[in-house]
Image (cartoon, rainbow, N blue to C red; front, top):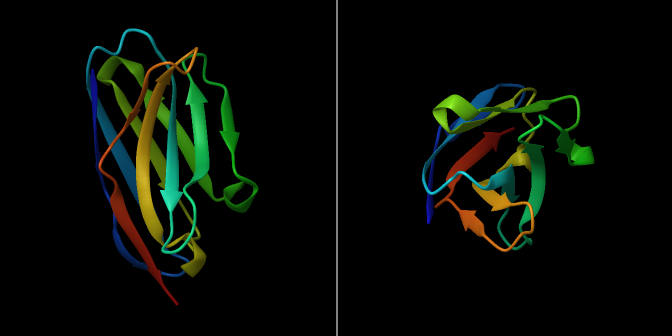
Amino acid sequence: QVQLVESGGGLVQAGGSLRLSCAASGTILDINTMAWYRQAPGKQRELVASITTTGRTNYADSVKGRFTISRDSAKNALFLQMNTLKPEDTAVYYCNARNSLGTRVYWGQGTQVTVSS
């Protein structure tokens, strides 16, 4: 089992920044990819950004150039630096971890990000 705990959400004005953190614990040796997803009210959960153990990253088009994902493998931590936030970024943000086959998938409890206009 892997436990994921997010922190860093909050209320920010449009154009502002936030940094989300995710602390991972448990049996994490075979975790390959970590990612951030978000879910806005009435919408499906969507991928925001992902990063593999080799550092390969992938971003949703809507956040490219504004968000940066990073991980500290030594500390079992995942981060999401969010700059130039927009009201449409308002959502619950979830930390996700999975192994290379996708047979083990874990989710955090989520952290609310609210961007006011």
